[in-house]
Every structure is written in structure tokens, then in C-alpha cells.
Image 1 (cartoon, protein in one colour):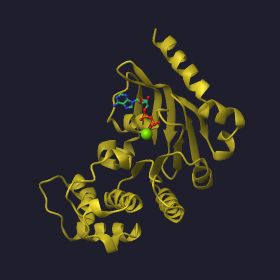
Image 2 (tube, rainbow, N blue to C red):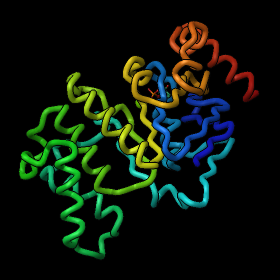
Image 3 (cartoon, rainbow, N blue to C red):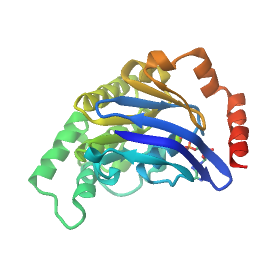
Length: 246
Ligand code: ADP
Ligand code: MG
């Protein structure tokens, strides 16, 4: 289990999260939902230890050990450098080398795992293509293949449905749900309320803090949606945050 308690995160004067608490269980498929700039990516990165919290803490149960080793992270596609001259196969294999360290050459099992991951995400036919030549939807599937190749217990994905057609979105959600059913901890950031309600076990509404956490039925109340998506509230939270800091 992963538990984030009262996380506050700032980038210089900009408060990104204030007292955000959440927990994620093995076997559970969770979605983090909220408007642009709400702190969704920051929450994911803080859980991973890529961003430092100014207060609060993240605890991870012993069976998962260090998230650095037991997790696979799929960053927002727009934040990656797609001009890098590597093939689809190379990108998926990075899921293995990240695990092995650079001292070992990939062996047969690594190649088989990568091959299987490319098949699961239906990009095996593209494996020799440079990643530059791919569409947004294809790139997203290659990132998922890299994640699967890692064989991690904790899967954290930032907006994996962006730039993907409806049929592929459905396939991605089904794949992630299967990963959760296999006992993994799966957490994704998304804008897509409808997809999240349909496929996920747990939703977190985020707007500078965690507004609500629970099953779709528990979380989707008009008051929670208003609180999460209304821009006036965003300003309000910001003021609250500065008060708390003072
Ligand atoms: P989301 O993923 O919900 O769109 P983010 O977590 O990326 O939101 O960002 C939350 C807030 O923190 C935003 O106001 C954003 O501009 C700011 N922010 C995010 N990353 C940085 C950064 N590296 N430096 C400065 N401000 C940042
Ligand atoms: Mg983001």
C-alpha cells in the first residue's frame, strides 16, 4: 500500500499542493482527476520521490520496498523528447535496462518480455521504426509497452489517454484494469471523467488538494465536481494555501 499524508509542495512561490492525502492499494485501479494546473502531476511525482514535499510524507508498505525499484512511471507524453534517435524496440527495452542497470546486456528473457509487451500494446509491427515517425497514439502505446516491460508492481501513469483515439483509449483502460486485477497498484492521471468512472475502482478529485477520494459513486457529487472544476474555487484554494503558510 502507498499512503500520502498531508503533502504540501511548492515550486518557489507557487503552491502546487496543500495538505494532500491519498492512499493506493494493490489490486486497485485509481484515477487522479482535476483541471489543468490542479497539481495532479505534482502528486504523482511527489509519491515517486521525483519532487520533494515541503511537508507531509509518503509511506510505502514493506512488500513494495522502495518505489524506485518497484514502480514504473509513464510521464506526460508532451514532456518527452521524441526527436531522440531510437526505435520502438529500444524504447520498450529501456523498461528492462532501467531494471537491470547498465552493467548487463539484455538476455533472452528481457527480449521475450519486451516482445510480449509490444504485442500487448499492439505495436509489435512498428518495432523497427524510429519513435520520431510515430503518431501520438502510437507513442502512447510504446510508453505503455516500456511500462509493461518493466514488470513493476506499482504503475503510475500521467495522462495516458491524451492524443489517443476512442478505440485505443478503451484498450488502454482495459489493459490497466487487467494489471490491477493481477494485483498491481495502478494510478493514472486523466482529464476524462467518464472513462475514469467507467473503469476505475477509486477516484481522487484534485484541486490543489485532494477534494475527495472514494469509489465513483462516492466521489461524483455535484458539490465535489463544483469544488474541483470551478475556477473561482481554484483561486479560493490558493488563498487558503497562503494563509496556512503564514
Ligand atoms: P497538473 O498536472 O494538474 O496540470 P501540475 O502538477 O503540473 O498540475 O502543476 C501544478 C502547479 O504547479 C501549476 O500551477 C504549475 O504551473 C506549477 N508547476 C508545475 N511544475 C512546475 C515547475 N517545475 N516549476 C514551477 N512551477 C511548476
Ligand atoms: Mg499534469
